[in-house]
Amino acid sequence: MNLKFVPAVVISVTIALSFQQATAQKTEPIFEIPAGSLLNSPKFLLQASTGELIMGNELKLIAVDPNKKTTLWENKDFTGLDDADISVIDGTPFIKIERKKLTSLANNKSTYIIQAADGKIVYDSKGEGIKVRNTLIIPELNGLLIESVKEGMLSVSLIDFATNKQLWSVPLAQEKTGGVGIGALKRAIKSYLNSAFNVPPVTDANGNLLLVYKKQIFAIGKTGNIAWKKEYEENLDDAYISKDKKAMFIGYKKYIDKINTADGSSMLKEPIKMRDELNGITPKGNEYIVYNQAGINVMDANGNMEWDKDTKLGNITDVRFTNDGILAIQPVKDDETNFFWIDNSGKKIWDQNVKGAFTLAEPTAKGVMYVTTEKANILTYEKGKDVWNKDIKLKGKPSFGIDAPNKILYAYANEKLHAFNFNDVTYRLVAQDLELKKFNEDEEAVKFDIRENGSIVVLSTNQNVACVQAADGKINYNNYFKDIGNTGKKWGKALGIAASVGGSAMQMNDISKGNFMLTPTKDANGNTVANSYDVNSTNPTGAIMSNAGGDLYAAAKKRYLASQATKDNLYILSEMPEGNGLLVWNKDKGEITKKIYFSDTTPVFVVDEAVDRVYVIVGSSLKAYDLK
Image (cartoon, rainbow, N blue to C red; front, side):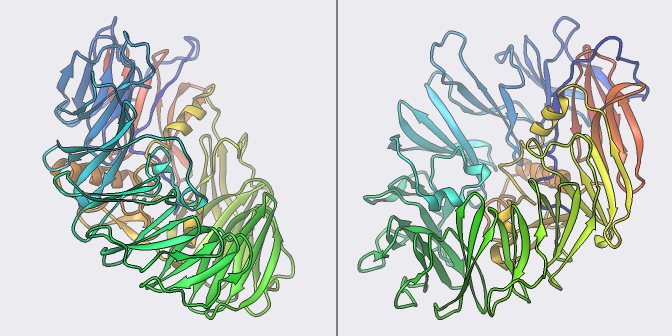
C-alpha cells in the first residue's frame, strides 16, 4: 500500500485530439443524457464529493445526479465559467466558485460556496469586496471554516455541515506584512500553506476554536463570540494543546509560555526563556521535547525543564525518540546532515555527520536507520557507527512507499527498488534495471501499492505501471503507455486536488512521527478502508475525516474515503492504435481490461473511482461508461 496521496475522487481533463486520431466509441455507454446544446456544450465537468456531476457552458451551471440520470438544478447566474473558476471542496458537500467580475479593474475575485446536491449558495462574497484565502474542515465544530479578507481585515466564517448554513462570521485583525519563524514553517503542511494562521486551528475543552495569527491568539466561542484574545510582542511560531485541551504551550523567539485555554491567562509566573531561539516543540507522552538553534531540552506538562541546562548540539530542526533516548537532527546544508543521540538524562552519546540532505530517520531495534538524498545506513546507539559495512546509495530523487503492516519502507531511485525493513532492521536491493520509461522525477513521484500481504509491489506513474515480486525482485510486468501530448501533466496536476483532506495522507517526515504509530483509516460508518492508514492520531491532516455531523457531510466522507482505498485498477490516459482515450489496467492480472475511446476532438471527462465509472462529454451529451 501507499501512504502517499492516492488519486482524488474525480479527475477532470480536457484533451485536444486530431480528427485523424479520433475513432468511434467502441464500448457502449451504460447511459447517455443531454448536456446542453451543440452550440453550447459544457466546457468543463467535475464531480462533487457527494457524487453530483457539475457541468458548465456559456449560459448556465448544471448539476446532474448520475444515479437517477436527471438534472438536479441549473443556475443561470453563473455563465461563462471555465475549469479554472470552479473546484470541489473535497470531503464536503460543497463546490467553490471563484471568479473576477467582468466590470472590475481589481484582481480580487468573488467567491461562492455552493451545496452540490441542490445548488444552494451557502456562502456569497458577491459585492462585498471579499477575498477568500482558504477553507478548512474543522471536524470538532462540524463545519467548514472560511478565511477571508475585506479591505485588509482578516475574518473567519463557519458553515455548519448539519444545516448547511453560515453560523457566524468574525472579524479578527488587520492584515499586516511579516513572516513566521522556522517552527511554524517546519510544521506547515499542504492544506495550510494558503492559511493566514501560523499553526493549524484547534478546539479546546470547552469547544472554543483557537486561532494563532501572527502575534495574537483568538478563542472563538460556539456562537461566534470572541471568548478571549491574547497578544504577544513577537510572532508565535508554535502552539500545542495539551491532552485534556485545557492548556496550550506557545513558542516564540526564545520563549515558551503556557496558557489556560479557558481565559487565555498564563499558567506560568513568567514565560520560560531559553538561551537560544526556539525551533520547535514535539510531544513525547506527557512531556515535550523542545529544540532550538543550539540544542534540546525536555519539558514536563507543567512547563518545567527537566534538564538543568540545554544539551548543546547545533541548530536542531527535528527530533525522533524512543524509550531509551532522543535523536536530534541538524540539516547543515543541502548535501550534509548531522545526527545526535542523547540519553534521557540529556547526555550526548554521539554525533555523526553524513552526506546528503535529510530525508528521514527512525530509531529501530539495532540503531538509527536513516536515509538522505545520497545514502542510507544504520547508526548504532552505543557509538553511532555504521551497522552495514557498505552505505546504500540512493541517487536522484527517491520516491517512497510503505508496507505499513510489515513496517517496510520502499524507495525507488535511479531505476532501483530498495527495501528497508524496520522490523528486523535489514536492507535489500529488491530490483535493479527497473526502468520507468520517460519518467521525470522532477515532475512527478512514483506511486506505490503493496499487495497480497506485502508479496507484490506495484509502482505507477502517469504513463507507467510495473509489478515486482518483493521476495526475489522478479518483474512480473513493466509497461509504458504513450502520453497524449501534455495531458499527463494535466492528469498529474489533477491528482493533487485533494491535498486539503487526507484519510490516508502523509508527508515523508510523518513516517517517524509517533514512533511509527499507524492506525487503519475508518470510513463514515466506522469500517476499515482497505490498504489505507492514518499516520498519526495527532496529525491534523489525518484527523480531518472525523465523525462530524450532517447527512450530506457523512455521504461526502464515505464517498471520499471509498475513493482513497487502494483499488485493483489503474486508469491511464494513452494514445492507442485504435484511438486516444482511457485504458483500465488491472494490477493483479497485469493486463488492460477495458478501453474507452474518445470520439470527440476535445473530450472532457471525470473518473469516479468510488464506483469505477468514467463520465464523458461528447458533443452535447453526457455519457457514462462502466470501468469494472
